[in-house]
Image 1 (cartoon, chains in turn green, brown):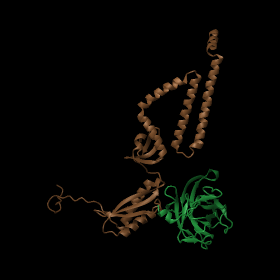
Image 2 (tube, each protein chain N blue to C red):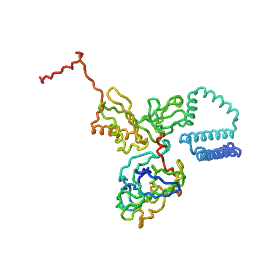
Image 3 (tube, rainbow over the protein chains, first blue to last red):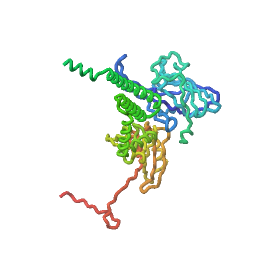
Image 4 (cartoon, each protein chain N blue to C red):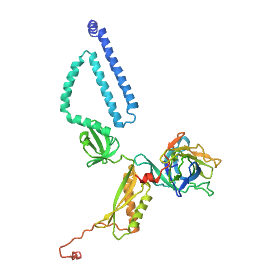
Length: 182
Length: 281
């Protein structure tokens, strides 16, 4: 997984009604790790991205975080076509628990908490659950321990760069206004 | 010899002297442990969220204060009258204070600077014409390590009344490029070329978006301010790569960057300076 969080920007804007839940899928370009040696004597040489992503800033000028920008089309169901060997499918479960229409413009996905799984053909990450409770409020983010439910026979290829806490609170949604007003 | 030694020991190492020596050792050991314990609690509680410099200064205050107290207690155990000693110390203190007004000013200014939190160790700051990384903040001065690896000492006293720019205070920065293009060029095309160059450069941040401004109709061309946002540690890479990107994209698109020309005028109305080529002798 990339070494920084991703700011996911859907190519087509999504709106989630108050109280509704939705599942969205998107592709994350994987990073390649190069090792020398075998077994316990393995030494990591370097890591390279399969796709060079541009950098972006998420949050306030004073205390935001440096991320990669990922502009992707969000899928609502499992892709029928063959998946890229350099991308992993990430399943995003969003619950709009607020009484406002959620205008999904961008979202920070902490990919450092994601693991990588394979079913022999494609790559997958564990599922991400986001509970949106309002604009400028902290969304509740959880990471499942396993790959997507709709895929079977998965084997874990790589654990997360950083292990998430049980219930991680992150400010996940950002709205263009809050950035442009600065 | 034995008799002499026995006499010597019995005269100087009486039970009272040994008792006093034991008390002094006890004061020093207990005092030393107390200073360490107090330092530990100060570090863990009072200065948990303080800067490294504040922690270091609190540590020094506790350590020096503690050892001063231990010294006074030891002197008291040795039979010295503390009132006379403190009186003498007061007189000496006044004399030293008058003689070192400047130093005291620096110390007080140092505390103001520390509470001000304008910068910390490791920040890159500019003071006047000097720019460098803050190497240390001491009681009397701060030390800057410049980028050509020299050390500059600046007294705290002079810093209080000087304008200081903290370059690395915030995590992201904006880099401005002042560009000129010839009057004949299409401005929307120039704008698009610059924005594309920034978008293609992975070091330039997508957000905040690059800034573009037509500044003025200049003497040689149209002046443009183009600015990109970047992560503060990428300064040199961003400067060099965006510079190259702009030049390459202008060259590829045939955009002219005007520059000043010098025409040598020989003083004969407006005729050009006559040049005649002679063959080699």
